[in-house]
Amino acid sequence: MPLVNMKDMLAHAYAEGYAVGGFDLVGLEFLDGIMQAAERERSPVILSLAESHFDYYDFELAMAASVAAAERAGVPVAIHLDHGASLESAVRAINLGCNGVMVDASHRPYAGNVAATREVTHMAHACGVPVEGELGYVAGVEGEDAERHPGEVVYTAPDEAARFVAETGVDFLAVSVGTVHGRLRGEPRLDFERLAAINAAVGRPLVIHGGTGLSDEQFRRLIANGVSKINYYTALADAAAARIRANDREGAGYTALLAGVREAVAEETARCMRVFGSSGRAEAVLAAAAPWRPVEHVILYNVEGVGEAEVGDMMAEGRRVLSRIPGVRRVVTGTAVKADARYRFCWLVEFVHPAVIDSYREHPDHKAFADNRFRPVAGDRVSIDYQAGPGPDGAGSGRSDV
Image (cartoon, rainbow, N blue to C red):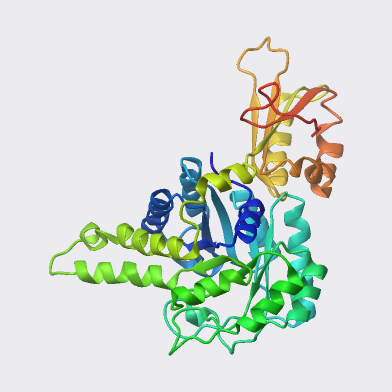
């Protein structure tokens, strides 16, 4: 399962002087094309799902496909929420499987940006998930999705960037140094002196939004000045659209129109990986980055003083309440198949990361449910937290209680 810790992935890129592409996907053709390129180039990759694109697909279904693609991959993969609009968006993304989130409050005044970003960072770090913030504003000019980023470019100030990182605790910082969302008009002019000053002030991976239209030399200079993640979408969309137009002929059906789209996406993605310097880095990142494995929190229990109907009501409430807690992937309840089983009932609560063991225990919704509904009737219980995969005893470690 080559899902890896995104913070470790980008720390490796920052230290070794290359960048990982955050490639936005809007359908299975994009997902398949991006993963084909990553496997072919032996490159780490970030599957990026932008909230600004949610009108075009079902986010929950797209996340399920992205997680499945990552789980069967032979290269290191992270899954990232791009341009998250709210705390609620970030919680939902994490609970569906994102192991990196971006909160985009760059359109707000500085204080509002700090407050919104800090709130998401506090929540995400309690789930073990790193956070990307943005300071400055990368506007849209023309091309697909540009209209979702109206207004004028606001450049990132180096001294303000250092203060922003200190006040929010973000792990990666998206900066504005002259790129735009969508397509550029004319020759792109990037402020590399500003970027170098930001890198010196911040000292952690920087992110560029609006990678389409830059030259290979500009990409190399961005990376030399601390950029470790480059968001890329418009050129992928243009490549896909060009392939569809080439397929258009009288009587062409849907599948005929889509023929070759994933290959077109893969070709452009692979080109970027070579330019960004991530090609051939898969094995090094797999060695350096911690695997991203969920934790299974299992509780076996018997009840006293209540009937099975009441137990069913409690389970239903628990599934509803506990599944909304940040870092909880799923909540499953069950009843023993054999009537003489040592324990009659069970919970299976899947956490996205070991950090959730503690944050879940202390979450007020969990404490209220456990103290008022569960523990009073389930004195006879046992619980264990474990991770799948190799360990000193073949199991996981740690204990908790519902």
